[in-house]
Length: 196
Length: 218
Image (cartoon, each protein chain N blue to C red):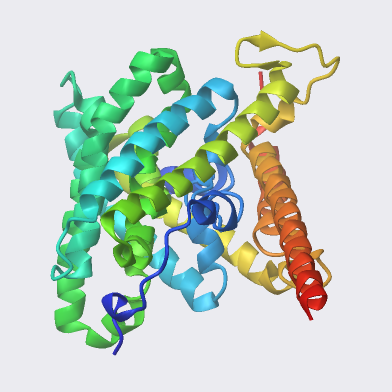
């Protein structure tokens, strides 16, 4: 029960208080790309949940064993990328071998959903906020769920944000960024607003 | 089926990456570190230094990766090369800006190793250029990012702290909310809109001038 509570607690932290998009702007470029289609939002979110949750196990192991190593901080990106790469390649081999239909569906965007700021950033945030293995996994799952929340909110507004009602210069990317900024502002109410 | 190598060769134009396909303000390929990281002049400088070193050398090296290698492996190689280059990049940044600037930029420095200039542009654009042309083209993309990052950092530094870097500027007001992530989204969104408006205007003027010249010739 304690393990479940830890996972849930960390996942809620990642979805609401440390949302990778609204609070950290990590992976906002991928989000804008994914929000074009509902299937992309779901596909990207599932891949992010899978990769971050699985990577979190290895990252937790690295964080606990190498915590005292002097140069761990500077080697972190390299080690984390190696972890993500191993998971990426093994998963792709398994999917390609046993689920060729799924492989065909995801192959056009799977690299984008694995190698992005959202996944890598979640692993760094895990190092800061994760408590224990369950916490790390929960935070990984929460990052993907947070991405889904942001992606869905953007998907439902996608047509309006790209419509003729928006001035030509602000259509697309600029108004999308302002829109995400306004949702991010709304989410600040959860944490309480404080700057300095 | 056509592959990238079958596509017609394109001509390198540094202005493409600098303005037309600016990765922050026009195409939005790399916005996160600018929105949430470039909170002031120093952070913008730290992000820019690390981005320049990682991206330029990664692209220069990754262009040499054989095309025979499958994309799944190539993209892993790109990410590994970039994360290995993070080490000298962050050391250079620490040397130039001090440890505090690196700490302030936080996780927005290491996440630069998975930027889309390295992972996507290498595949879709740089492979179609000769090596020399590719370096010029990459410099354009990097210049575009650095300008957008500094513009965001300077605006926020001025409106939040009433200074630009070390120079104090008496503004008589401050807007602390711009320091936050939502402030970053709004600043970058407005800058992107202005950049597009100016670009569209200049393009329209250029087209109009061409039309006028044609009419005069006729």
